[in-house]
Image (cartoon, rainbow, N blue to C red; front, side, top):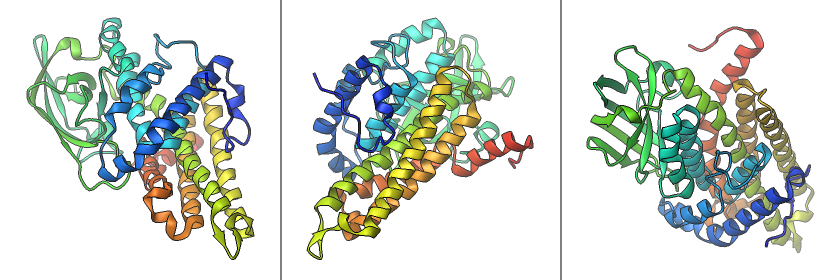
Length: 392
């Protein structure tokens, strides 16, 4: 049994608000990540490969079950957020993998599927026997996915035929299923489909030369007359508003990832500053270094306060997409500042992978962009403030 210890960067002690069972589960997850993932993650990051061997152990720890109807025990929104933070603290790509297979893929089925569809796919996703992916973004549409989505779905009796292309689809090169969003040619509505990657006409090609979230296997997907049964059309996924229900839930997870990524860089930097000697003493004794560390901890604490509060509102059923947008915007932008300050403290060593900080630095760029860019989230919040739609 692993005793629970609050992270030193959890300055306001949110971890202490967890139940005893949640503390135990979080400690076990942290122990596995520190002992089995931290030692290998830089090698996989440099090779741009995913350590597939970690999936089953994470599943056995319940990581892919928390928040589902078959969760191993009742857990709070704070606990689920802190699990994401712990994943990103070690590596943001691992947190992103969880966000895709458990948040976006399983979340789509959990939120929008029928009871039969949930029973058919969710247990396998929770156990790690099925890896999920989420196909929304397209080569010519990102932030304008609602209007710019070009992938089509055409019904033929008891089957659907899908045609189109997707881009930046995480896990897609080795996933078992992809939630594909396509426009129904009969009514022009965006609908969601569970597409097994073994289906004829489906292909996924890894995007090479990616220097952020390198471990995540992002792909270009082509759908060429992909035929699936009507039972693979998610019963309650019949408009982009339904798609947004999933994105609203997962945007908050991305905010937690941003905090965890920043926190990971900060922890490595504090340890470095305490051990690195210059002018005959540790650089942690210099005022300018301490100021940067204080700025970093302040940003992490601010972000953690926002995402914890929005998670609490979510649990009470009184939160909306504006609050998720605020949480993601704050956490991602503050994380960007933190990783830059941390890299600055390490000097030349800040760009050496073995010190970890450059990995967090690079990964912060992806977190800043996906699940709603800074500017798009600003427009969502601005619309709430003014009542005026400012999207082009």
